[in-house]
Length: 131
Image (cartoon, rainbow, N blue to C red; front, side, top):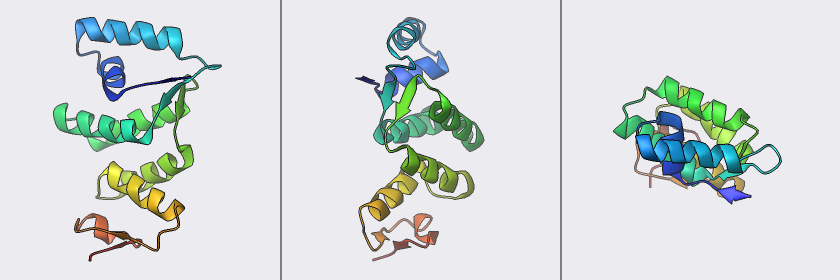
């Protein structure tokens, strides 16, 4: 198995850099298969969304579709897939960032009683408390 960095995925998805996009396409096509999928970590997904929303100005609905596609692509394996799916569901309808929903789910899975944050959007979630 190989791990994929955020910017390899960015180049593959956006096709924005003529040289690096071609290299990303060739690499993923050659090295990410159903039998040996490329690993996409939750951190990479958080960074990917940050880049697509911030640098590229993608609408939230398009970013959700991108994540759904990554989750259903057999050539990619998503780390903590159930955590990511749950976070995606919350992100789809919530007002906080995707990374915040990942954080909440990882804290909950680790047995934390709550997530403490000064983020008011995040604090709307029933598992989050303001210190």
